[in-house]
Length: 66
Image (tube, rainbow, N blue to C red; front, top):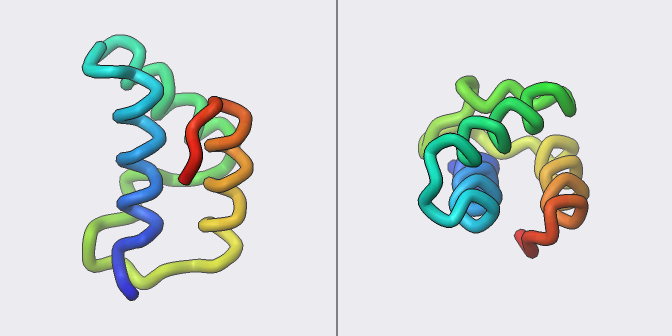
């Protein structure tokens, strides 16, 4: 199913920032620093199992279940 990586990124950012744009930007930066190019993924992007696993780990670090 295409777009799961995109949805996972959006869920992490949305739940962690709770609508605060500054925190959302900070969360996106942290994800990028952890090695995931968030601009590369769109709702139609093919899913990558390795990236999905990494996002699950990042979500756990942030206290967000994805």
